[in-house]
Image (cartoon, rainbow, N blue to C red; front, side):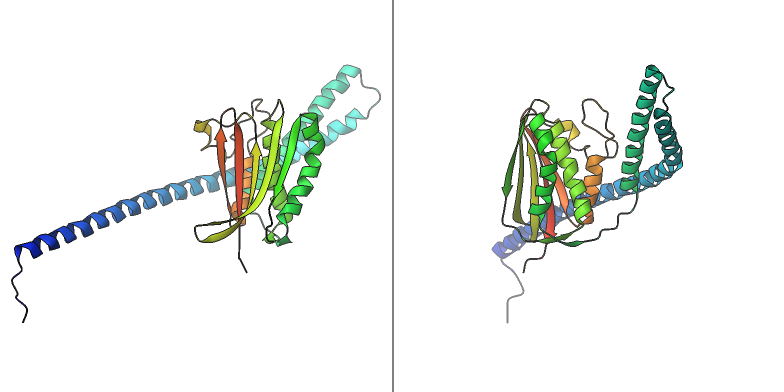
Length: 271
């Protein structure tokens, strides 16, 4: 029969072991608290964005018809031969501004409405190549050199139209970030992160970069890093919404004066 009395050394060892377990539990408790705070923050942010989405959608629907009428009537008046040059100039300005407002409303509704994806098997390299062909002349005119680094990647199930819109926003932002020219590099590849397979698309520019204090806000609705502030800040939020709607995510790395890299991750099931 085992002695029911423990030696001093045994008690010391058991106490040390108990302290280790308590320390481990405290560590897990802190980690759980951090996760809980993060989830609460995300929930609050989601509720805020949902409320904002409903509000902006309602406002957009209310003002879309008047803006469309203004634009249509202005275009009719522009065709009148009896107008003076100054009057035609004013009408042209009104028409351009009405068209700009129509585009803003379109973006607002795109961001606010629930997106339905029509997925088909696609080669993301071909999707990117189609987009770059559109931007070739624009890049040449701005002294921007395009580099393509396409990897051997599997086809993925995506909504081609929506994904083209998302990547187009990133390419457009990249070219705008290089007003004095530079290099636009598009890289596609495969990655394995957090026990998941991803097809990645990285858009890198050698432009002005994004200030550290703005990195956490660039995906917020109506925030823009454009110097001229002429474009409503919905391009990146829409891009993020599309990517997350495909079960993926987007991240950014940027250095002032050196440029930015936006990385898109599309999950896929490896065979």
